[in-house]
Length: 146
Length: 413
Image (cartoon, rainbow over all chains, first blue to last red; front, side, top):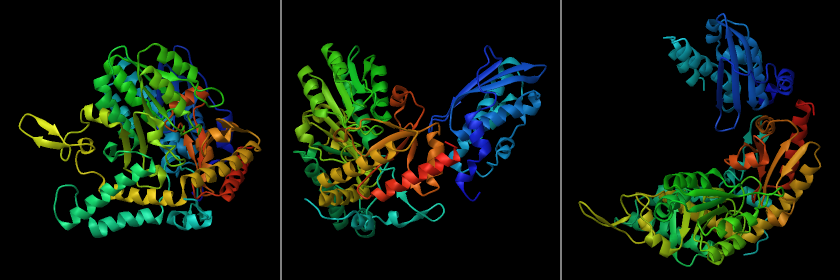
């Protein structure tokens, strides 16, 4: 990427002003929260599960435009997908949607906070509720995102 | 010493200010509240130490050890003279303000704070003047209370009076200048009220000492902490000053070499002050480099430093106020604030703003500035912060304003 300012294209600005799937789900099947200690970005993710699918997903919190846009895109990708497919979401699936593959290191955690929260949330659901023996891999992935 | 040195001349002493960043843009460094840049005199002093004098200090008898020890101890004398400290034995070299405050919390606090006692701090403290007191009061089942901040960014001292009236306040820990709002605390008044009530006072001078004349002896506080790296000196050096009677009665912070008089199998006697609190090989090279920083500031004169920053801050406040969508935090009364300006720009998140501005070579800070208690008080997640020092110019403030308008275009404000 030639310029960091290039990241502030129309889509990012639009998503940051009007985030998709923004809000809360009362009594959701999965809720998870995390924040970035260095910058204070803070994200909650809520998911409902039906027929092994993410039947509904919302995110809530405060963050920069990058964080808000990536959270919007992530929830759009995940909504309606099977748990198995959501498990497989990789960071470039989110970054690629917004042309952020080469984001500078210091901002990558803004972009991936919501993916981290989603993976941890799904892990706790799989490990605790479904006693899934392979859940630990998800936790590993979440902790090594950035 | 009054000086007629121009900013242009000062800038020539700072090699880093000549460099280009990002797309070949001149560096505009406005993150001085985080750390200051280093003049060539400081860089040379450190190089000279390692090139010509490197040795451990205090014990060996050889020539290098003598030179190193002398240079290291000379810094202590310079600190004493710079801050009007009467007794050099009261000056302890530490890693920085954070370590200095933790030293007090550990070595004084654990002996003197008991269940039910109160430690008072303020809503605009840096985490380094909050967390050590949380650890201490939790351990001792004591209480931590906060002096609130009003809408003008000033401490509400009536609240201090209320705490003092309980008779339970053992320590009041307050910064002399807020690293977010720039507010200069009325520490003389705070110390006066605390002394009347018999409470000890710790002053965090991390933001004040680099930017204004400070007379530690005249203040009459009990503990005073600050860092070298925010005042042109190297990182990894700070100072704790405390009254001798307190230091003598405190337990050591770290045990090890240099802090002992005699070590036997089961007991040890302590070295004299200040060495009792300087265990292990200290940061010799950087303490020596720090002396060059003090020399540099003395040469300019702290009155000049303050005047220069007042002028820049006045100019920046005026220019920023004129930008539609800018929200400024802190007082407009220039006599009550230092060269630190926190702001938000419409609905642009500070991290996005800092990234856009960085593209123009301008370094500002964005985030909570290690002051999350204050962020809660201001009801914001983060702010952007521009902070000035001796080498900044009005042209650089104009560059910041121009860059803001580019951000406004990108975010369609």
